[in-house]
Image 1 (spheres, helix red, strand yellow):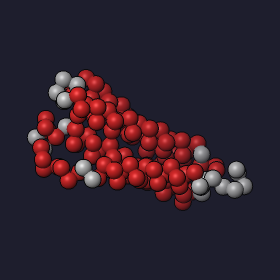
Image 2 (image 1 turned 180 degrees about the vertical axis):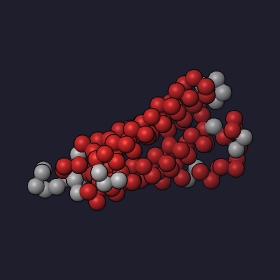
Image 3 (image 1 turned 135 degrees about the vertical axis):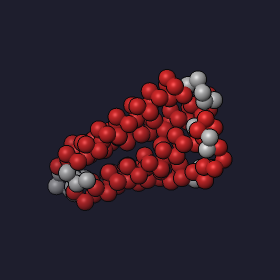
Length: 133
C-alpha cells in the first residue's frame, strides 16, 4: 500500500462501499431500523466516508511523507473503518439480521476502531518531512 496508485484504488473502493451502504441505510434500512439504530448506522457510514477520503488524500500527500509511514497511516485508517464502522453496521442491524445478542461482543470493538483512526491522524500530523515543512 505504499504507492499512490494503491492508495487511490483502496480509497476509491472504500468510498464506493460507503456510498452503497449510505444508500442502503437511506432507502432500505430507514423503514426497518429504530431511529437510534439508523443514526448509529449513519455514523458508521460518515466515518467510513471520511477515512476513505483520508486514504485518497494520502496519495496526494505522498511527496511529503515517508512511504513506510504512509503504509502505516493507511493501515490505521483501514482497520479503523473495519473495527469502527463495520462493528456499527453489524450492531445497528442485528435485530433485522437475526444476529441479536450473539454479536454483543462487538461493542468494545467500536471504540478500538476509533482509537485506530485517531492514531492514524496523530501519526500523520507528526510524519511531515522536515525538509518539506
